[in-house]
Image (cartoon, rainbow over all chains, first blue to last red; front, side, top):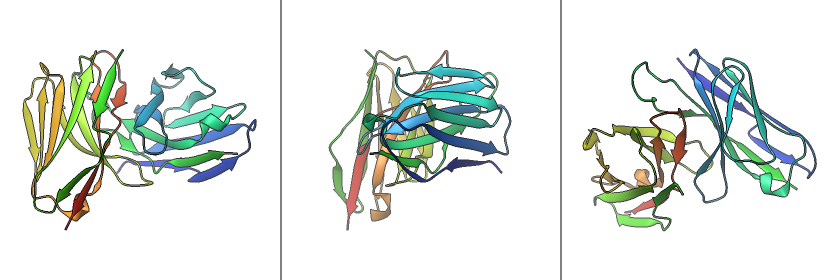
Length: 116
Length: 112
């Protein structure tokens, strides 16, 4: 069966420090991968999505970047964190079926990032 | 600009009643629409998907409608239970890309 691993669950980082959040998927091949951020009491903001290795689409210009070094690995990074980067970060995957729409997205447990 | 709007105010209903949540969108031509449930501190969990050429989809106590003319989807939970209390999110899928864009979510509270 397919599973998604996202870590760490919580993270407290000082302003100006780097960030690396990792997400891996098991049990599927060539998934679409997504990074979302959710502010407290708000909806999910799409940050990045990827349809294949090395293919990254950025949705919101900001202090973050993403990479997909392997088929089932998606990494969210920052060189210098800002206070406004605090939030709940969620990784998700889906598999588009040929000739049809995207299937449902499966989410990781999320990372609660607090920048202090 | 593109918008996906859900009622930001919490919906409070009594157990046994039908809960109806609304998702409105502007400047989108979605190929499909999905509904998710999110509990506090957890990732969203998929509930239902409805395609642009479908008017209604049902799953157990859940029903989703999709009106591409009104640019609106309604999500119904019949015979609601306190365990249905959560935040419900709609998400739109694009024709041309693999993006999945979420609405702001509506918190549902079912009280006994």
